[in-house]
Image 1 (spheres, rainbow, N blue to C red):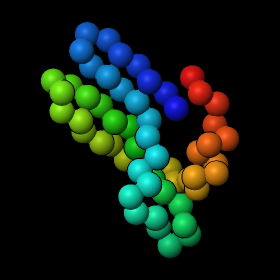
Image 2: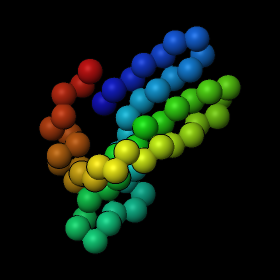
Image 3: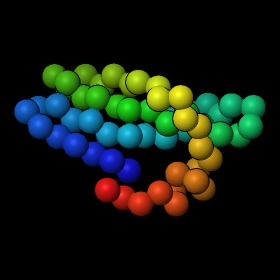
Image 4: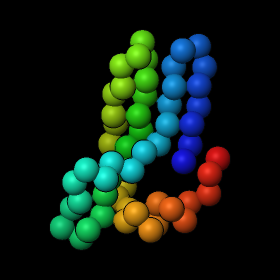
Length: 58
């Protein structure tokens, strides 16, 4: 959905669809690439795949 890149650092939002919670929703995470290594940060929001697909691309 959201991607930002500057000085070799790439930040994007991702829907982590590997494991759903009890409500059938997936956590939204921020993925930061630095020196070719991804690190994920949970932001405390969960969505279904349908809700994620309705979000506008930025």
